[in-house]
Image 1: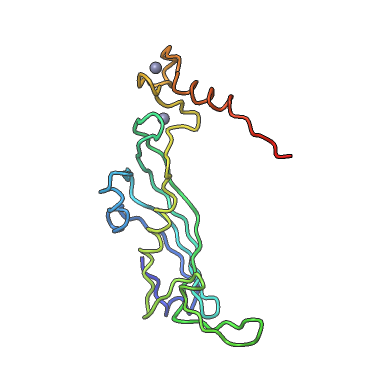
Image 2: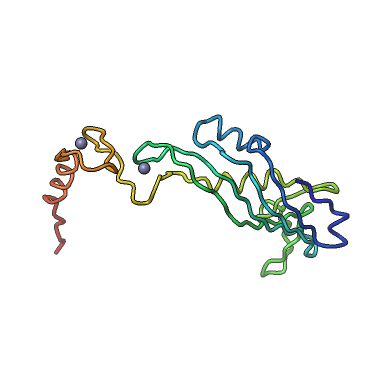
Amino acid sequence: MLINLEKLQKSEVLFDFQEDADFFPALAEVEEAGDCRFREPVRGRIRSYLAGDFVEVEGRFETTIEQTCSRCLKQTTQPLAADFAVTFSAGATRVENDREDEIELSAEELGLIPFTGEEIDLTAAVQEQVVINIPFRPLCADSCRGLCPLCGHDLNQGDCGCQGPAFNSKFAALKDFKVKKKD
Ligand SMILES: [Zn+2]
Ligand SMILES: [Zn+2]
């Protein structure tokens, strides 16, 4: 997952990659925490080119993850994929403000990823893209009805017959709540 700068100065760099999830330290951590299991390697495509002092990287990743549905608690396996674009910058960059004073901003302050040396390692950037795309509240389906809060029955398999006083009392309280208008 390295981009060689010497190659990049001659032409854009294109390549496909495929790595097991535990190749990426952050993804191994996610698996260990039990939030998500990677059922397939992380595959993807990278296109990189020089733009002035910056190295632009456009890519896409795809994998398959297994998570626990946040409503019905069943395991659910789903594809995870996203396009991304990140910009790398060698060191600090000068930016002029309105008053023509020069302010030196570091690459990180500009939202750029700093790098040094003759190679850019994409491991950290790619794993970050995977992590930020993992659903925070996974669902087996948007229409998942979840579990009955009273008896725990999976409502995706039909109604359980509970009257759901927990919900009713909540709405009853709302019904009696009236906003007084100020004169
Ligand atoms: Zn569900
Ligand atoms: Zn029930």
